[in-house]
Amino acid sequence: MEQSSAGSNKVDESGQPGAPGGSAYQVVQWLATRDEVDTAVQLYEDMSAAQRDRLLKEAVGATVEERKSLVEVLRKARDFTGAARLLQGFGSDADAAALFEQGGNQVEAAEAYFRAGDIAKAAAALERGGALERALELYRGLGARESMAQCLARLGRPLEAAAVYRELGNVHAEVEALCGVPVDDPRHLESVLRICTLLDNEGQPRRALALLVDTLRGSEEARKDPAVLAEQARLLRRVGRDAEADEVLAQLPGLGSSNSGVPPVARVTPATSGYGYLKAIPIFGELSLEDMKDLYRVAQQVLIPEGATVLEKGAQGTGLFVLLEGTVDVFSGPEPDAKRLNTLGPGAYLGEISLIQDGPTSAHVRARTAVRALRITRAGFQHYLDTHEGAALRIYRLFTRNLAARVRALSA
Image (cartoon, rainbow, N blue to C red):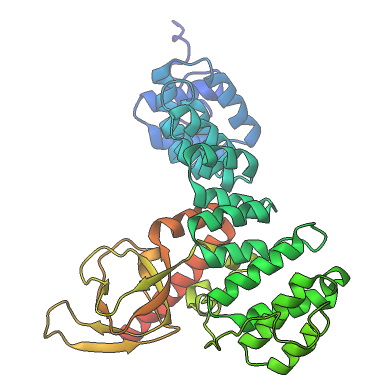
């Protein structure tokens, strides 16, 4: 009897008649080229990790077309990292980078994005992968100062982060960064005084005074520093505690109990920083302190004039607004005779759905009075999610839970 040609009428580990003998790579490749991709996927999924590793090493010497067919198998088997490595070196770096990201391999994704010329995505992938110094270098080259500041803060370089936030005009982020300056840093007292000035300018002299008192209690150097004592006296006057201010001034050489060391100051109405309001939003309810502080630094304070449109019905959502001062009216539409549905004040928030879902705004919102608010843009929030995977998981979990509760309530 005549022998069949190599591999014909043979049942190999694929379970398919006619499959060639030889390595697992040859079998999978043979199935893929015969449009039996699903069978090839199942075979690949059933392999041990060692077998898959051998297959990928053998595939290194394959032609471009053979690799492409194998990439499709690996992609369907959800071996995203393996598929990405097969794509490298064939002008498919952008596709490889996306697959590396799907596989959770951020550093290799960054390298692929870099080769593809997408420096911004390379920097973000490095940041996600914890390679913060390299990410910082790329952000600096791009002039992406917000991302630079975030990296500097996460690297434990608060003074540098604060300097960038100061350039950006992001006061509360500068405050948060300066709060991270350790007590043994030579510029600690300088940082404390800067925080006090910023907080006072923002209408929070009581918070500034509490910080200064805490610093004085823990630092002999602070208790001997004339600038710190003078600032304490000034803040005491700001909150109406003139007698205590005089006692502090009496400790300053050459001033005695005279008021000449501190000029008269106006009393102020306390203002909120908005951190507590932001923290109270349900989808942020499981964030850790560190993640919550990072999110707070993403927010920018904005001033909205009376009568201005805050959210336009039917327009794409632009992000979250948290009201700090003033009130807004919520209408059914933009028409002059539209029904007023609600009036919201400090602590209320708008547009949180647009942070996660890209869709049109469902209501029309106008400022009834001048409004001060915290704003987190959709782009800024997406970058936060990309670089805080644990926080992203908690946010999406709560969002899904809240969405399910709304659906149940509507169905009841």
